[in-house]
Amino acid sequence: MSGPGIAVRGLSLSFGRTRVLEDVALSVAPGSIHALVGPNGGGKSSLIRCLLGQMPHQGQVALDWPGPAGRIAYVPQALQFDASLPMTVLDFLAALDGNRPVFLRPDAAARARIEARLGHVGMASKSDRRMGALSGGERQRVLMAQALDPAPDLLILDEPMAALDESGAALFQTLLADLRSQGVTVLWVEHDLAAVRRLADRVTALNRRVLFDGLPQHELTPERVLALFSHRGAAA
Picture: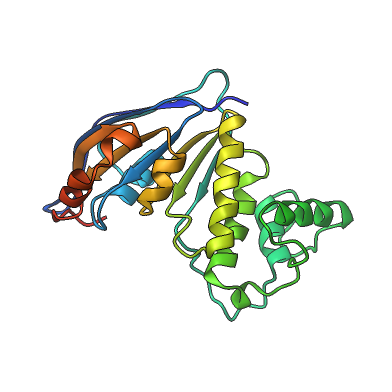
């Protein structure tokens, strides 16, 4: 497994008269964990949507694959759905599998695969829980489970730790370390700067434009962090 490099050049985005991103440039090394940090409304989620092809924009966003294009997985900040639906965790993951019609229950082999996937994120034996009965942190674990199987080459994370408890955050950090060892490229939007310092290979600070970029231990100084979160940004 070998993840792609990412090159963003001159990326600009506007909503009406509101400038959301302005001449953004950054490079993500293949097989690295690259964190995006910045205030709410600074354009981080908008940058990800541009990368996923969900927003028209100016400038270039390019993936440099080492060979044929691989699998891209995305974990959003939260899952939006009708909590009253009688949908279990098994139903949810089986529906995303795509190998069987949605109205059919998964066969024994598919169920075993889903159970194994859930065990990898600390949700073993919870496949029959109703999605609406899960906590926010448990739903994030389910989203991580669907992102990791099949194994991605590029994983895009939009604040995946926001709803996690301490054990969930520890599990997430272990998963990130495993992904790095496998050569997966990870682009990670995160507010927990302590976690970024521990886990990220590089950090880019974004508040409509790039404010600084480099090694987390060097760039995330108290003075720079204070300046980053003291300035008003555009809507994300």
